[in-house]
Each structure stands twice: as C-alpha cells, then as structure tokens.
Length: 316
Ligand SMILES: [Zn+2]
Image (cartoon, rainbow, N blue to C red):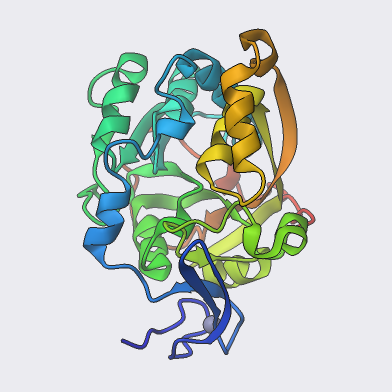
C-alpha cells in the first residue's frame, strides 16, 4: 500500500536508496526523508521487541557496568533540560528501556514515568525505579490524560515509530502548555552515515525512519512546536557495551572481531568509558504556549516567563 510522507505529505513509496541487512531503504520523492520499505507488519515489529531485544544493552554479568555508563551518558542531557526547566516537574520518557534515565531522574527529584513496550525491560527496571513508575505499553496504547507532563523525552525512539506524525500529535496533547519535548534520533546527514554507507550502525530492522535535523525541525514546527536547541549527540560508552553493540549489529567485517574481544578482554579494560559521536542529533522543542489547556502537575515551567530570552538553535 502506498504511504503518505509525514513531513511533506507526498504520497508514494519514494525511490530505492539501498538495501542493507535484508531491509530496503527508500527516500521520499518530495523531501528526501528516508524510510524502510515496505513498513513491517505490526506483528513482525512486536516480535522484534520480545525476549532478548535488550540483551546487548546489559542484562548479564555486565549489568552494573552498563547501568552506570548509561547514567553517565544521560547526565549532560539532564543538565540541558534542567537549564530550561529547573523546577523538576512531571516527565514522561517514551521508550524507557531498562529505566536508567528514569532512575537518574528520580534521584534528581523529578516525578518521572517510563513507557516501555518490552515486558522484560520493564521487569529489569523495577528494582531500580520502584513499582508503578514504568508502564508496560507503547505510546499508542497508553491512556495517559492530556496536558499531564512538563517534559517528554524520546531517546532513540522516534525512528522506531510506524507513524511519527501521529506520535508527535499525541505527545503535543500530553504536554502542558509550554511543555518541552526532547528527542535523540539517528542523523541521516551525519558524518558516520556518509562514511559507512549501507554498513552504518543505525541501519537496523526496527528503525523505520531516518530523519535529518532539518526534516525533523520541519515536522515539529508543523505539529505546533518551536525549536529551542539542537546539536550532535555524543555517547558515553563502556568498552564492554560498545563491543556488545558492535557484535549485535552484525557489521560485516567488524562483528567477528568485537565478539572475540568481548569474550577475552579483562573486566577492568572493558569497564573503561569512551565518549564518541553517536551519529545522532538531539532537538529540544517547546510546545507553543498558547496550545492546549490546563496542567496536570503543580510545578510552574520557568520557560513560560514572557521576558525570558530563548536560547538560540545550536549547530546541527
Ligand atoms: Zn516527504
């Protein structure tokens, strides 16, 4: 079935760009947005997220190393959000995985809720975040009331969503007026993408859309958001995590070597942390203050103040 581009509304299947790891990537003939074609059936997507989807993210003897590393990765994102919203109100993390970000937020005084479609990941998060904090549901399935959150975050999530335009409409409804949306997603215009071509590590079966900062900015503005900040994303990784990710991603000539290294290198070496460009970008956007009605939380967003100077858009 032909599809309609979420950014420019041009109908059609676009033009074939490349096929990698058994998946064809097309580009929209109107705006160039890249997407997998055909879009996988809902049942096939659901099957991808079962059982060991997050195995390469931890869940073994390296759980504590990976958990600490992930919280170190999230720290600069937290500081970026808190510069705009120091009150620490209600925050929803969509695609919360094993809850490291939610755990960090709770420890910093936020009222955080995680939404996660993998039951295993929700269960793995429980000892760290407590009961009722992680909800086992997709965004589409969630029945959260409108205007309930001051901040919504999506780390590596938007590229997984079959209908990103509809998802952004829903997120807009869930935010309080003037609420913040923070996204991190692969950058189809990144150096790593151009360098690695079809072997780019972000080409994965479950990644359905590949945005550029320009195209996502355009989509967000259409959906009633204004961009406050944006830029390249850097990842803090332990060597243990990096080796397991590269092995799991089945990069042609690399994964055999990283698999051997993950088995043989001593623990103290694998615990070392590296900070690297991730081939992703972040955008921080504000829901137009005039949109929506009412607030589900008591904290007052400081960025609604009329005399506050808005930050300029960073280089993306
Ligand atoms: Zn398009």
